[in-house]
Length: 228
Image 1 (tube, rainbow, N blue to C red):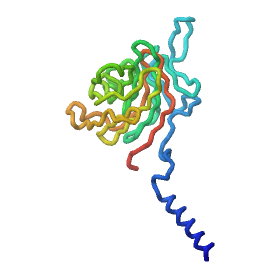
Image 2 (cartoon, helix red, strand yellow):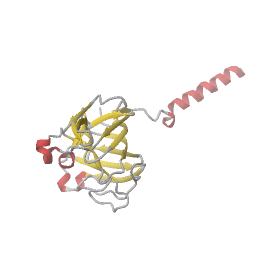
Image 3 (cartoon, one colour):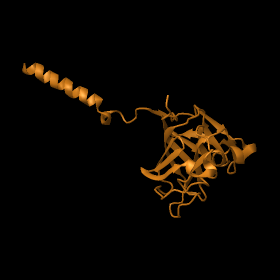
Image 4 (cartoon, rainbow, N blue to C red):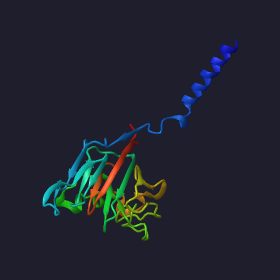
């Protein structure tokens, strides 16, 4: 009797653990967009190479080194993941170099960037770019780190100065957009609250920006929140 009861207790505890959502793997539902080996799944929109002034040789603008996506920033363009998303939660780890005017960003719900139609197809015009700068010593505004560039300022700064690693999360559900920097919410915005932004797309590509200096990205993962 005792053995049977003890067995039943163990089975009951096991079933309870399995049904407890808090016990589930925290990686459930997440998809890694970067395999840490190469740029499989990604497309370069804009220049692919630049001339290095130190040795006068052509070098890749985007490359994978030491398990990270690296851009020299020597050319304006984007690295785009070749699949569209609508509702999602995106997590990216990045670090900026300690260079003057280092600048990058993350495009969301955007289209294919065409350098010949730059002002129409870049994320900050067509949809949104979440700005990434080394500006924690300044005052938040519509062009600051964590902003929806040119449209919505972050309510505070929560990023670490270059060259430290930062974690940024972007959640898009319908017209609502949240930006979380190092586990602190910096934007909680409904695009329907601004007349000029009501028609911004609710679906599109995700991309990383090359702008002016060296930037590294490592973890890039997404959880699809679209209703199936």
